[in-house]
Length: 344
Image 1 (tube, rainbow, N blue to C red):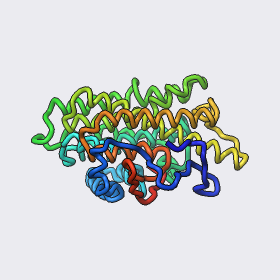
Image 2 (cartoon, rainbow, N blue to C red; image 1 turned 180 degrees about the vertical axis):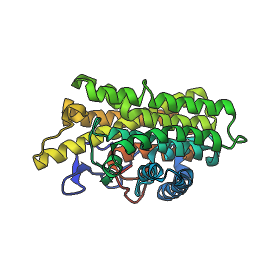
Image 3 (cartoon, rainbow, N blue to C red; image 1 turned 120 degrees about the vertical axis):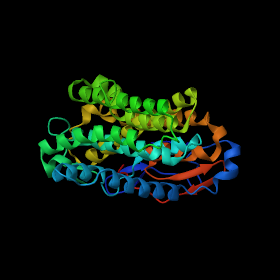
Image 4 (tube, rainbow, N blue to C red; image 1 turned 45 degrees about the vertical axis):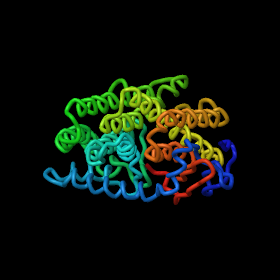
């Protein structure tokens, strides 16, 4: 695996690892190598994003009172979003033989919950951010009061969407209840809420816990929900739980590294330095930790090799988290896929 400390310029300010010619982003079993050359990862992602965007548009129609729905749609239907939580859910469901129609309602709910958490995270009383995904944050457009209401409305809408839209002939009720409980756990006081609280109030020593709860919980939940909907065995669910958590933390650690480097080169003060892995432990340790996370996430997937090509989309999340680029490589074959935006 190429070392993360080898950098090339991707933009005037952001730098990240350069691939060696014909390098393999990941390695899979020989049985997977026989079929992977036919897998078009770019088409897989593009088609899924289009389907998810359409279903999200349908799930949040504008009605009275219009302004709250406009605020909800503003954050959920952001143009260019890569829909990582819902796509991870669908990919996990299909890995275990599930029908993506069974996963779409939960996938949309995950995006609603994700958007709601970002709306609240950006508020002046929280992280106080004015830009999200390349445009003004929700409260900067609609006001703090409306942003709070939009976030509050999206959380229950997600749960209602799962219950009302999931085909009962595809997902048994007990399995669906486990999905709802999983999302509630991820966003509550043992998950993202705990991470946000500590992010606001803790010392530097809690940064690892904050990353796991604030960022790892969403990806963990997405992978587990997909596995549940697809009918995975309990040991397979736990393997994807670990995988999702590792990918979520990995993405944020890499974000920390990129942001630290950008601020250092521009001579700007980094306001989140004490809340990031790179700021607290240094860039070198953050790079080492990112490589460790990438390896551990892939090892979790190695145990699912019997599912063949179906595991490839999940491998792609790992390398995307680091390289912000999609490429599928198996043994001696590498299939490059057009670069994706870093915005999720």
